[in-house]
Image (cartoon, rainbow, N blue to C red; front, side):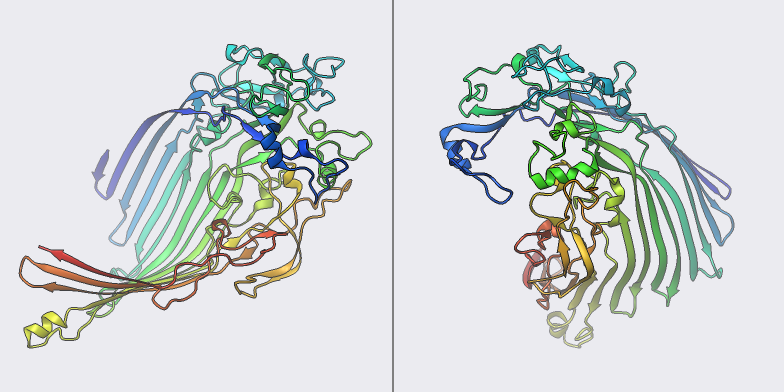
Amino acid sequence: MSWTKGAHQLKFGFSWALYKKIQDAFANTEGNFKFDGSFTNPAGCVPSPTTSCGFDFADYLMGFAQQYTEDGVKISGHWNNISPALYVQDNWRVNSRLTLNLGLRWDGIPHTYEASHLSSNFYPNLYKTANAATFDANGNICSVNSVPACSAVSPGLVTSSNPALGGYQFYLNGIGVGGVNGIPKGLVNDSWKNFGPRLGFAYDLTGQAKTVVRGGFGMTYERIQGNDMYNGAVNPPGDPNPTLNGVSLDNPGTTLSTGNTITAANLPVLPLGVTGINVHYPTPVSFQYSMGVQQAVGTHAVLNISYVGSQGRRENYYQAINLPPLADLGNFVNTKAHTSDGTPTGKTFAEDLTYLGYGNMRLAFNGANASYNSLQTSLTGTIKRDLHLQVSYTLAKAMDATTASGSGGDLQNAANPYQGWRYDWGPSVYDRRNVFFANFVYDLPAFRNATSRALRAGLGGWQLSAIVSESSGAPINLGVSGTTAASYISNSGTRPDVAGSISYPKTAAQWFSGTFTAPTCAAGGPGTDCYGNLGFDAVRGPGRNNFDLALNKAFAFTERFHVDFRAEAFNAFNHTQFEGNSNSGGISTNVGAGDFGQVKNAYDGRQFELALKFIF
């Protein structure tokens, strides 16, 4: 609704949206086999970190699978959410030189929920240490099916009431089901107090409409669009995901060592993974602001100089939470096995985790920061009668901690779960420190006023245009090949150590150079060097320098028949432009790789395009 009263132009609005989505869980009910050569291991061969024994393909030909995994159930979830909102805005023309924009918006953003109570989540405050799982000799949770038998069945086990699961047992210590026993139906505390003010002004500095100062500030909120719920659709007790070792390819329900048939009721109970959400889940918010001056240049052009920025708070990320003590991590990395951490206690990896009874576990959090600050300049308009020009330059800096995968999206994993999102704070995947852009359209004056109609029609009326773009290189995040802490802590990532400064030879064979090494992650040590000291996105890739040209003319043979001719040259000067985005395979980024630091791809060279267009 709009209401104009005197110098005020008032606007009011509201919305109420209901979203309903039916989506299957991300569950593989057809199963996966793994063959690692363990059944064709030559006698006397001892595997080492660099040498393997046996032949995985030979195991496959013999039909001997080292491992088999399969999701037991693929639920079809009914995922709903509502989004109510209100706003009021006043565009107030204070006087002939000053206009104010004053507004306030409210967004109610309760979390997405599963309508049939099929969603579950892990709550650290519900996990009872007294019910911590105990393990049998094979690393499975002690149950009635343990072989050899345990002295007692582990606490925390619950037999599934789902007939389709045939008596399968889940370990549910700390698990809550959405909408049941006081658990929020969306698994997290809903967010309702989302008020976003809008403040802006425009001021004619001289009163002659030649120089205008503008500024503004606003707060906006964002919903995480349901993916945090879909990712957890296979959490216990909704989906058993057993891992069977030593089974037959033609029938993974048969154990090779004994020939016994495996059923849901006699499956070993394994520590299952959980993908959950932190119960304190405030809405991500962005604070956006700008201040600038627009100056008329002549009668047909405008010069703009502005400062534009934003601050993101409560940004989304995943973080692994079921971890061994940091001091123990190096023992697993150096022994290259999950079987023992090398300490006198001889704990297995599963027995050394924070929440005994679970495997890989990560929670979604809203807590990271982001920032963007820039100086933006542009000149736009008709400079002369025949020349239309646009030129812009931006000096900017974008920082965040939520784009570790390079996608720039939400629900990305914190690389170092012991430090959280701060380990990934650095230049954003979008960060380009310098960006220059220019384009022009020039109507060539030659033969425009020729007395001969044939000359005017045939040689006059040509138009030349160009697009020029230059930008600094994109940031590159380096990784490490081989066995690292990330090999044991799922959903994490390792960066290298660096000593000294980083230089840039800027050749295809070596774009950057430095003393990069894999983290030592010392066995039995404090483990603080397991994830590397190099900053996130600490290396810069190649920039871009591109020039596109076009020449075109319209030939009018009659009033109704025209022919348009166009000749275009992309990358007109055939300038070599290396791809600098490591996520597109532009540069090899893993320390330990044979091609580390090499440029792998380049953008297209010069391309010509000729076109005729008939209009009749």
